Each structure stands twice: as C-alpha cells, then as structure tokens.
Length: 465
Image (cartoon, rainbow, N blue to C red; front, side):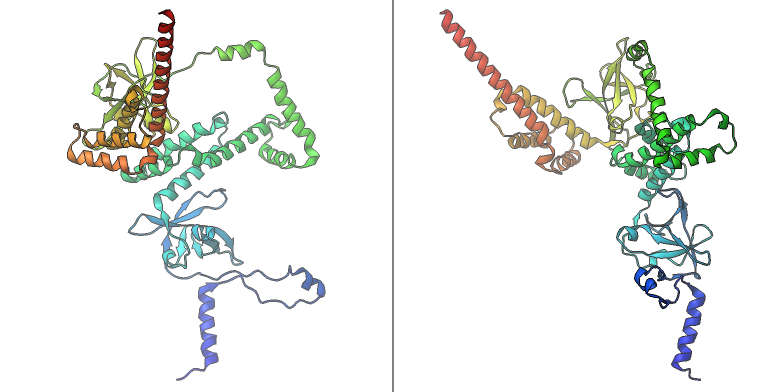
C-alpha cells in the first residue's frame, strides 16, 4: 500500500515529537505597534534535544559557582573526557546540559540529563566543535572548585593565607584514594605544573567570601545572636550593605576595625617583633642515606642530590639553616618551588638522616640526568668566574665549552651521557644564557679590578723609586 507524501510527513512528525523535546512555540503575530517596537514578546528558540535512547553514565563533579553540578563523561578506552555544564530546564522539567569546551568556542552542544548524571545518547557522537580534555586535568580542576567551596563554609580557615590553603588542597590531591598510583602522579603533575599562581584567584575569592561572612557574624547585635534565623538575618544584612542606604552600617564596621587596630599598645607591637621564629623539628637519629654533594646556584653551600634506588629519578636538597647545636638542615628544592618546606638533617657532608623518599613531599622527583646537567652548568659558571683567561670569550663560546665538558664526562656511561647531552641541547643556548652571561660579567669585572690594582701598584713603586 502506498502512502502519500502528506501522510508520510505527518507520521514522521509524530515519531519526532515522541523522541524530541523542545521549548519552541509558534511565532505570534504582533497585535499592536508597541509589540512591534519592543520585540520582547517574541519567543526564544532553543535547540531540540533527545529524550529517549541509551543512557550513558557520567560523573557528577563540582562546578565553578557550586549551584549546579558538572557532568564529566570519561571516554571509554582512553584518558580523555567531555564535561557538560547546566544550560536550562525545559517546560516539562527536563534538564539540558551543554558541552563546556564547545561553549568556550562559542557553540552550544546540548544533551539531556536523566537521574542526576545519566546522559541521553552517546556524548561522543554529538556535533562537538572542541577537542576532548584530559580526564586527569578535569579531575584536578573540579577538586580545586570543590575545595574552594568547602573553604568558603569553614570559619576555622578564615585566618589562613591563600597559599596555605593551596597547600592543603595539594595534600587532598596527594591523598586521593579513589585514584590509582599512576593516576595520582599525573594529577599531582598537573596540579603543580603552573604553581600557585594558576590556582590563586579561585582560592583568594573563597577566602574573601569566608572573611566577609566572618565579619558580618561579628557585627550581629547581641539580642539577635541566639536567634535561630540568624543566617537569614546575616544574608539580609549582606544584601543591604551593598545599597547606598546602609552606608552608616559600612562606616560603623570600618570604625570598629580601626578602633581595634588603634587600641593596640606600643608594647604589644614591639613584642610581636621579638617573638622567636619557629622552625619545624627534624630527626637527628636514624639510618643514614648517602647523597651526592653537587654545586649550588650561588656556590656558597653544596646541594645534596639523592638518587632514588632502582630508577632514574632523584630528589635534590639545598641548604636551609643551622641549628643551635650545629646540625645542618636542608630542604627539598622541588617542594620549595611549590611553597612548602620539607626539611631533613644532613650529617658528614652529604649523608641524609632518614629515608628522603618517605618525607612529606609536595613535588614529584626530578630526572637524575636533568639535575646532573643543571649542577654541571652551575659548577662551570663558578669556574668561569675564577678564571681570568676566559674574560675575552663570548657567553656563547663559554656555553660551547660547557657542552664539551658534558660530552667528555667520564663519570657517566654512554647512554647516560647521551641523555645529558639531549637535555643540555634541548632548549638551546637561550636556556643557559643568563647564568653564563652573569659569570662572564663577573670575570671581566674581576680582571678589570686586578688590572687597575696592578697599575696603582706600579705607580706607587715608580713614585717611591
């Protein structure tokens, strides 16, 4: 039996209506000139999304604002994922999410979400205009957002600095039990990649929100302090404090804080300066682990490099302080770059007290070859500073001499020497230019000073004779 084109179109529309939801409404014809001029009554068009099909399980994660969760969908058989953020709610109560990556590129790629975190239809087959993100990177970002939301609610953290809170988040990433060891290492690598500055703004924003709430709690009148609706009163106060009508309240808050500052005595100010500096305790007894003394950047105290047994990685420790009993205390160089002091005692020049691997590091170990090349460059720069015969050479010629030293290193084997050369030449001359140029300037200044002194001595001898 043949069906007409109109019957076929009607049947297709019926199937589409059962599988697709839309908030589109028919365009209404403007009834007056005011409607034509305003244009406000024109309905907003939305893209249609599927409501039937196979469900794909996603993972609900914390969003940036903390209002609606973000759905992360790990692509099976790989380390990539797509993340979807809340877009709208249809007139029938269905949730519609859109791809975060496509949104950054100016495109809305929407999908329906059922039962909290189940996506309707395969998210990979959507018309994306973005590339999937690394699963580990998205996990770290969501973990930072979740920690910031917890910071904004915990009054005990109001006195901490943003950098200290960043270190607390680093501990959470380090102690993440849900991730395996390899995945945890990748998460730590991504978390520390750009340091504290890459996470400073969301953490500082959470701290400001927490401190504002803390100040508002302090200025609540005594008769309302025990009220069960205190949170509502505080929220009402915070909303009204933004309006010009409550400028007296804002001025009173500032005056209160100023009076507290001015009421401090001069003795108290002096006593805070004389308070002794506190240091973390270090172990002075235990098994000794042999390290290797290498040249440091300034050349004053050596750097202790500890190669991790059974691998090609190492930790390097630089001089921190000397205790009142004469014990040397060193700290991990990688942890110092990340804003944390991980200290260990050093005996007999280069022996570390206790296993350096078991220290509470907040950094990943470095490749032993890379650290060797860096220390060799520092040592060569210090030798350049003391050798006046090299004052006539350009920094690039000195760089080539250091390359010859790396090539002729007898302590390293053939494979290790090739890796050292590869690391030395990786970023070219520009990566080593500053320390070499600094050493060359120091050599020229020393030579000029010695020449001037020799001339002065010659003049004095001529005068006396």
